[in-house]
Image 1 (cartoon, rainbow, N blue to C red):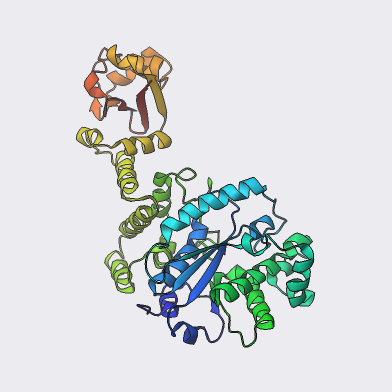
Image 2: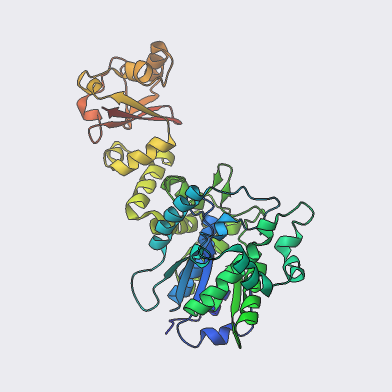
Amino acid sequence: MQEKDFISELRWRNMLQDYTPGLEAYLSGGIRRAYIGFDPTARSLGIGNYVQIMLLTQFQRCGHQPVVVMGGATGRIGDPSGKDKERELKSMEELDANIKAQESQLRRLLNFEEGNNKALWVNNYDFYKDMNVLSFLRDVGKNMTINYMMSKESVKKRLETGISFTEFSYQLLQAYDFLCLYQQLDCRLQMGGSDQWGNITSGTEMIGKCVTDAKAFALTTPLLTKSDGKKFGKTEEGNVFLDKEYTSPYKFYQFWLNCDDADLAKLFRYFSLKSEEEILSNEEKFTDDPKALKALLAEEITERIHGQDALTSVQQVSELLFNKNCSHEFIKGLSEESFKQLKSEIPYYPMPKEMKSSQVSVVNLMTENTGSLPSKSEARRAIQANAVSINKIKVNNPDDLVTDESWILGKYLLLENGKKNKFIVELIG
């Protein structure tokens, strides 16, 4: 049985937009199944997708069974919802690679392994792979009128700019997905963002036509936007992804630290797994210190997505980059992972390993070996101005050498010229 009421949980978190009548009574009757579809349009899921993952997470935490439906079929078509022009279709090979990558992410974020409500995985390509076009038109297309399909907001918005039959048919596929899940898994609830309401209710409509005395339900969350009205999860650099290969753990962590104060309460409710009491208590405790509250959120989500080691590393990197009182002892204690993070955030110079034994001069390190300064005379002036340090130890003499002991973990050092110019040097080879 569920530990808490799902609808009530969404309501206090402000994650509830619309749901069809009778859902609350249905959910109170034991373990239920609900699904959300994910189309493999990118190699990695982004923070925008994470809203829906959190919806499935809360559903599972309330004792119910989430069903993840990967759009192996619908991803080949393209959902017109929220789009003002036709999508560019992906190749089959790219879609298959995206599915594999997203599956790996989703399996880490939901419990697929234990309990009587462990998550289920479905690829909707399985519903269509043995169906020909005539069967689809007879068995699926016959159950929905053009009038009904054109009444959907996702279609109406595109009529002026143009919509292909391919994208127009998307809601047919999503509706048929719901029918298949209803018949095969007794999955009677589909969830999604508010822009999916039309597609989801197309599914409840089709189930009502194809199954006698059927009861199927829809639930949506509000679209998560920032206080300035812009799409959540977008930055000047582009999307914020859950895969470290596309958004580094450091940039992911900084995204949460740099969120607008006006968005903080909303983001905490959507993305924290803390209880209502804990969240309200923290909001009261840090009323005058939103920076500390952002740090709590950033820590919780970064650890959940990237793990404790990555969180420790990004906190070390943040300390190094933003705390002017950072010490030599702190630098010496940095992990390999922290230096890897630093290499992607500040200028990085690889250096042949044999240079270590030759004890290169600091002046040569800054000029010939790294090019951080264009000339030896400028390097000497910087040292004489007390602006240069290695691993947070000031260099006082232009003739000083970089000793064996300077290399942290045997291969890294932090070179600084002034307060803002930081460089990582690494011995390689």
